[in-house]
Image (cartoon, rainbow, N blue to C red):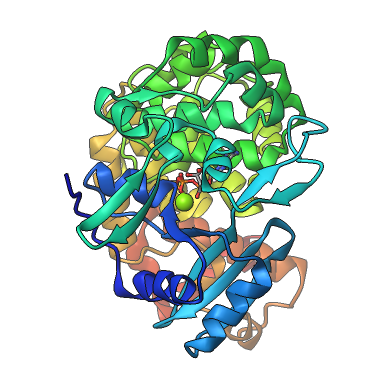
Amino acid sequence: MSIQILCPDYVQTVLAALQSAGHKAYIVGGCVRDSLLGKTPADWDVTTSALPEQTEQAAAAVGLKTFRTGIKHGTVSVLCEGVTVECTTFRIDGDYKDSRHPESVRFTPSLAQDLARRDFTINAMAATRGTDGWEIIDPFDGQKDLQAGMIRCVGNPIKRFGEDALRMLRGVRFAARFGFIIEDKTANAMYACAGGLKSISRERVREELIGMLKSPDPEGAIKTLKRRGLLKFVFPYADVTASARGLNQTSADSPLFRLAYLLYDAIDDAVQKTTADLKLSGADAGYVRTLLALRGEALQSTPLFARQMIAKYGKDSIPALALRKVKGEDTTALSDTVAEQLACGACVSISELAVKGADLSGIGIPKGKEMGAVLGALLDEVMKDPTLNRKETLLALAKQIYKEK
Ligand code: ATP
Ligand code: MG
């Protein structure tokens, strides 16, 4: 049966360039899996018998530019119609020294060997276009597992997770993304190999976690991580098991919101340690902390309170209130008030006052500490009553405040 794969022209041009130079060339991995699932692949990877230099020559022969993006691993990027296609030579990964890095990679003329080094059966398929349409090369029954909705290791799961512990998190992520279950032997091996995650870089762990949080079933992912003994290696500083309840009802568009949701019951110190441990950027860590800063704070639905929130948290006040809402509190009225105040550009800082330092100097208020105190007092008044934020009014008020001091 011929299978339809909507492979873009630029990829087919690259395949044809390699094939007409006498090499084998296939699309492989995620793009084949996604195509068979009827989803649009994010990128198209090519696997080829051509050695990296041969890929360069084959591309040059049809006028395509190349870049040595991962030459150590056999990857050459070919630029075609403005898009780069990663072409990797068939390879066998050598022995792994530390659940992470293969000691060496060896090129091989065998597609079967290249597919055997891949993590899951659904990721170990290649495809090429024959005279009768697309032909799928599927030595590990990936199509059967795709149909059954099953994540299954290629080969012995204990060995495969021992080679690269990150594969366990990839497996959980794919299960959450596609709504698949993890085959028993693969799942049991996770339990046995969980400790291997200690040798994986925290950045790689974070990326897998973010992938799970972007999926339609992050709650299922957390449950699986817990059941398979992996959760404590992802979150060493906070037990997020209970706080995961209801996570699927939040939007998949904001993994950081979902992370804050998970950390809702953690103490501040654990939040701080978790964001540092996962090596979030300063901006991302700050965002998560802001979302959580409102926990336990008594809220009032007044415009003054809304402006005070904006002064402290800016427009992140809205998601911070949304977080409290999904955790069961009715923050709608305050959230509306904050939105109104943001929309009308309410003054919440000294720099937004209608008078500047120079205006105050003009009426005899000396620069320095005293001027700072007057500006602070003016802001307090304007926060209480935004209609006061007019130059004449504030100058009169400033005189009065200065005189009273
Ligand atoms: P995604 O859509 O998330 O990118 P993907 O399957 O394309 O999924 P990539 O990380 O882009 O994942 O990797 C491309 C292919 O390389 C995979 O399909 C798999 O065949 C192989 N692969 C990636 N990471 C590993 C790994 N850690 N161990 C074994 N094979 C891997
Ligand atoms: Mg990919």
